[in-house]
Image (cartoon, rainbow, N blue to C red):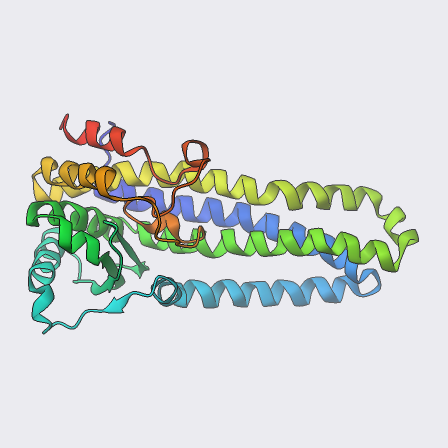
Length: 299
């Protein structure tokens, strides 16, 4: 695997965020423009600029508070620093945070028999890590260190900022694409003459509505898989013990059934894919567990 420095990875993640953000923002503007022309052709300009302002406010709000939304949707509960049930986990996180040179993230727990975890937040100063009860129950200390090291790496490398940004934009593209598809029926019933005049625009809009979500998700999948490999390697750099993480992945293959019922908008945040799907081999946001184990055991 190509050796990439910590600083190079931060720069790459920030650049990827801007590239993906620019691409998706352009797609969103196109979707809004087509929707405004179909639903309100006489007031299209006003509708368009009003919608753009609303969209920007939505993106800012959900990006700023996206980590809280993610923690709420996964039903994660904050772990108190003096809760003796989680002393070993708190110690692991504190030690690896010091090794990574970042502030200690807030800790959360999710009630689930599956072995999993995720990190979220805007940056290392505003970050959180959530783990499942299944992880604490089934993994040994060195295996927990491997998983936490992986999540700490996501925080240190600013992966969490990129992942939160992706979740917001992908969700918004899906919402607007669905709205555009519905607007075809609405526009067709109210004013067929105007719809005929806008036939080319409608065709472009239809293509956007169908393919925009797919395009954005493909970009997300490609970048997410790469991020997972790098976080695995960074975890080994922190723990100096690749077998701990490899063993944790082995137990996930044996125990997890992919039944956490997590929204696809946030599933890419998790250490291992929390949902099983027939299309995982094509659209999975995570590399195959077997491949990750193979690479770790070759280190």
